[in-house]
Length: 360
Image (tube, rainbow, N blue to C red; front, side, top):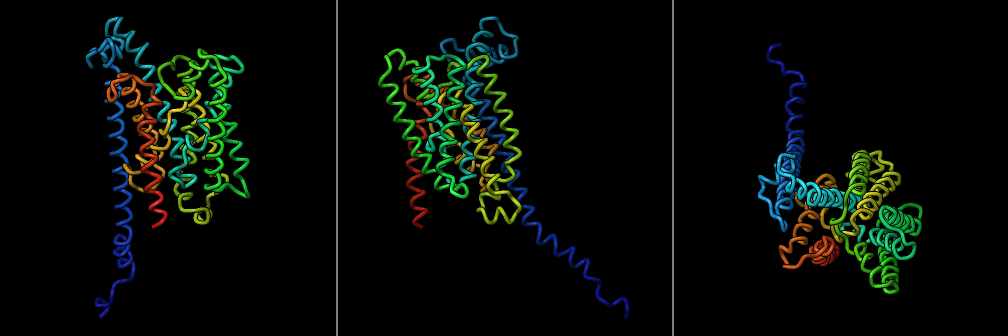
C-alpha cells in the first residue's frame, strides 16, 4: 500500500517549471541570435563599404593592392593614397556616424519619441552656430572652431533643459522647446552668413552642411578617444533604457532612479552630438534615421544602442562614398547633403505614419 502512494509534489513542480520558463527562455535566445546576426551583418556591410571607399577614386586601386597598401606591403604611392587620403576619411565617417547613431538611440529611447533627434531638437544647430560664430565673429581657426562648436551644442542643450524642466523632465516639453531653439539657431546662422563676406561665408558653409573630407590628425584622434570614453559611459546607463521605455511609474517600480537616469542619458547623448558635430559638422538626419532602422532590424522593442551605432556608421560611410564619387546623382556633394536627401523623405513618412498611429 505504501508503494502506491503518490509521489511528493517536488517532481510535479520541476515538470511544470520548464513548461512555464521555456517560452521566455526561447524568446530571449531568439532575440540574442537575431541581435548577433544583425550586428555581424552590419559589420560585413561596413567592411564592404570601407573596401569600396579604398578602391574608388581618380587613382583607382584593385582590392588586392588596396589591402596590401593598408597592411604596409604595397608600393609607396599606393600607401600614400590609402593611408593619407582615403583611410582617414573612412575612419571619420565611421566614428562620426557611430556617434550620431548612438546619440539618436539615446534621445529616442530616453524621451520615448521617434522624432527626438539632435537635428530637430536644435542641438546640432547650436554646434553649427558656435562654429560659425567663432569663424566669422572671433576669427578663430582649426581646433578652436571645433571647440566652439562643442560649446555651442552644450549651451543650446542646457538652454533647452532650463526651459523644459518643470518639476521633472517631460519628453513632449523637451521636444517642443528644442524645436523652438532649432529655429532660433537657424535664424541666427542665416543672419551671420548674410552679413559675412563671400569668402568667409564659403569657409563657414561647411558647418551648416557637414562633411568628413578634412578630418585628419588631432581631430581624428580626439573624435576616436571621445567616442570611446562616451561609449563606455553609455554601456553603464544602457541598462536603464528598457525600464524607461515602460514609463516612469513602471521604471520606478523596477528600482530605476528615473530623473537621474534620464538626465544622465541625455547628457551623454548631447556629448556625443557635440563631439561628432565639432569634428564633421551637422550630418542631417543620421541620428533620426539610424536608430529607427536599427530597431526594425533587431525587432525586440528595446533601444538597440549598439545596432544604432553601427547603422549610423554604415549610413554615413555609404553617404560619403555616394557623395564623393557621384554614384547616384552624377554630381559630387558633401556628406551632409546626401544624408539630408535620404533623411528628409523618411521624416515626412514618419510624421505621416506617426499621426495615423496616434489617431488609431
